Image (cartoon, rainbow, N blue to C red):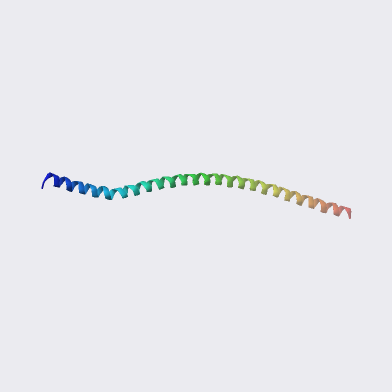
Length: 92
């Protein structure tokens, strides 16, 4: 076999390898781009979740304060009711 034949065979093999590797590398590139976009989206979602968690925590604290105030008002209503009953008993 001559050098030209060997060179032709090697070039054919290299061409087939390049032909087969090009779609694979293109797929890897697209997968990498998609993973990068998904990672960015997940980061944004995590920030939104943290913000939502902080809002929920603040709302729960506000609800606790409202419950405390309602309990105080309820206690005061009971006291006023008792005072009214006492006044009506004294009038009789």
